[in-house]
Image (cartoon, rainbow, N blue to C red):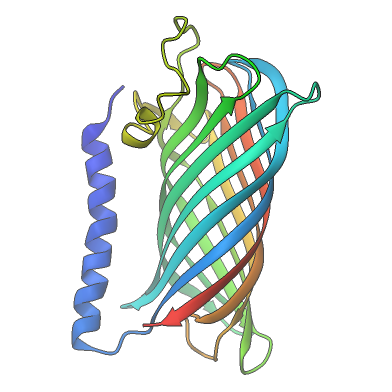
Length: 265
């Protein structure tokens, strides 16, 4: 089913949260930081709508991230834009294009040696898979618009460095996939505009039993205690998984190393 209303609601929630934080910061000194960074990843993609073969290779992604203390919670927003190259076991070549937007609002649920925060997370993601050697008339994608829990825990190793563990999982949402049967030259990979203007078209509702989005990261931040919004250098790694079961099984997996730098706002 098409879900323009739900899409507008999700975008509205994100924009509303950012506006609220900006308004709060105008009247008081709210700890905030903005990060920019680079991810170097190994990634694997497979789509059985096309052929049951996995393609693997390197991927580079630009990322940005926002941390801001807002009331009793911590607002975290993130965006990524990546390009990748992959080969299958027969050395057929493929390219991948991916982007993602995520936001979470986390409430502190435990304070001790570790600080633990839990709250709702939402995301809007797309992974497009383009074959270079053959079947260049088609592209295959997994687009998701999802909601689930987000978790972040951190501890300070000393006065200047802290260790963060974070994870997110999709419980429900909407998913976009190519149709199982497509006309010859119905969508050509040379026409890239639809993958920017309609990245999650013909959305269908689904839950964790139908498909999943999983993300886990570990990062080391150069940040003074006890501030919850870190800034300075960041070094880490992230594992990300997206899975679809309709119209045929498909998945994307990446393991990345990240370096970033955050500015105190």
